[in-house]
Length: 276
Image (cartoon, rainbow, N blue to C red; front, top):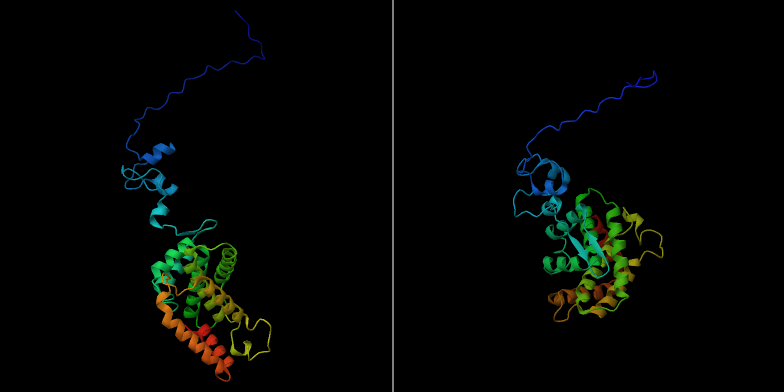
């Protein structure tokens, strides 16, 4: 018989771990089975699916791992061949406001659905719509005039950049209506965004500056787009506005003949910025 030395230790006999018997449930949702997690089998939506953000699919007609956010809060996407814009919650709020609060009605005699369809296909137009919708809400919702928000400034800059890139390319027939709509919105934003909060800060009451008549350059740019796209052509979205455009042109021509017409233009622009 072997003798143990003092330095030797007894080797413990390994014990067998017995696995606790349990009955495997087959009533869980398919999502949990696919993800290999334990389903608590609560219906209509189990805990795991709620936390993971997917629609629980006990129902065989519900797709596997379908994101719940896409069903409850669908994203609006504006995209063309080179650019994609997915609208945030704030973007969607301004888009609804543009459609429902009368912003578009005050701009053009066109159907809002057609304009929004164009915006979903042309991100530069979508940026312009978001900017002018936010500007309209700002003028209506504040007790005193204040400058453009960062939201407005961002979408105006993005619109201008994408529009410039678009105009540098060969244009297609379907580009004409969104180009004119975008030019119209940018023109309104330019003429109604006087960088001042009081009449004394605006031209011609203040000292003159080279930037005072920047909005006239925008008008020249709009005329260039007008000649390019011909908004009154037979198949145009704006063909029904021929009479309105004629009246606008007549008023603009007559304003040049009236002494002091610059002050009138200033007063109208300032009144628009303070309207609510």
